[in-house]
Figure 1 (cartoon, each protein chain N blue to C red):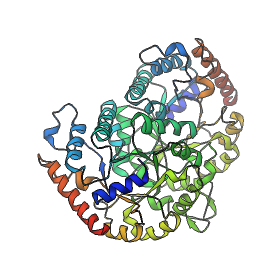
Figure 2 (figure 1 turned 135 degrees about the vertical axis):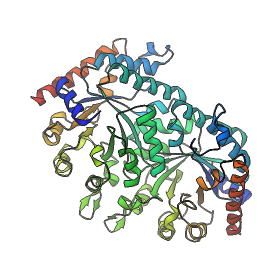
Figure 3 (figure 1 turned 90 degrees about the horizontal axis):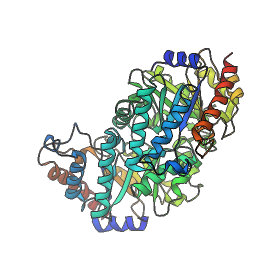
Length: 270
Length: 270
């Protein structure tokens, strides 16, 4: 999917919501646990109930890997289900990968070719040659960590590097990499006041924004400082939507939460 | 495995070699490709041929993920084979993971519990709460990126942070984390002169050292500056050993290369 196509979907659905599929067997409704693949069945129900309200789904790979081969099968079935039933959805493998060049190429192959995701999240610590192998894929997007929503973000990301915070240096340096037009960035909603500075460095890029809701970030604040002419934001919500209920009505309640977010977004888009 | 047990293995085998199992179907001998699981068969042959010369195996997860579920099955069979036939081998999942706390817990579960590796590599960018969930596992080790062996290491890792390179800040900060005694660090061999400084910060920690051989690092230089009283080094070699030949004799030739490394190490240990 190209970014104009993503923008088009945002306009059509009046939503820039991304739903995080972080599926934990301890948190999903008990009645699903007797099924052959509870994780996939949970995702399928969530997708069926919310696909018209969201432009993106983001499975977090950790939650699948934790269940070994069965988990990886659930991930594959989930992405195949999204791609076959709703090809207009922008899919994100939240995998935080990154390694030396030939290894990053293998990760890119895993997520862009084998699983056919539209995008994957990567970590910047190993620099240019750990990210460029992802950027080489046409019409695929590489979403690099810039400023994350957790406490540990202040351990290194905000350290002063020659008069400038490290995450700003990461943003600036990445703009010089080959095919950098395929970059998007992770910026946590819990630090809304940082968006003004970030937009000075990457005015046109899409930002994937976790941390609204459960982690305390405010949607209106993020939009006030982070939105650009093409919206340029994907606001992620995971737990607040997918675990809105752990009863038989979980999908219905997830829809209700997603609708609340979509309506707030529709208001902002006006 | 505990670090004294690892040190004991080093003494017994007169080796601090780690063999990287970065298995690429395009590089392994053609005659294996007709088998049901060529990746596992390749690994099994390499393990059978080298287990007395090495104290550690390090499958790089990217090379397995690139083949989807089949690849993940090869990874599981490989770690099960090592654990069942050679329980004294220290196993490393080279996965470079790291995410917010509850997600890192799932990754830790994947590698320490589901796959039963002794250790996993992690990236530091997201800070304390992205690494501590790994450190919480008893007798398991978390190998954090400090200074890597690739060109991109100079993009961010060596930037000056308040008068000190970022990788030094990463090393120092990590020492204050809970269960930091379970930390080891990745330090690339291509930067041997940096080991003196690194040993001032983490004198007692084990360092996993990639980049000897194929990437140009020198074993004797690394040992000169990086070795401590308990050796404290695991020297990784991947391609130079496992791809020594791509003919029928690949395992035999891999053993020959591993033996060369082990003998050089035995000389240094004297």
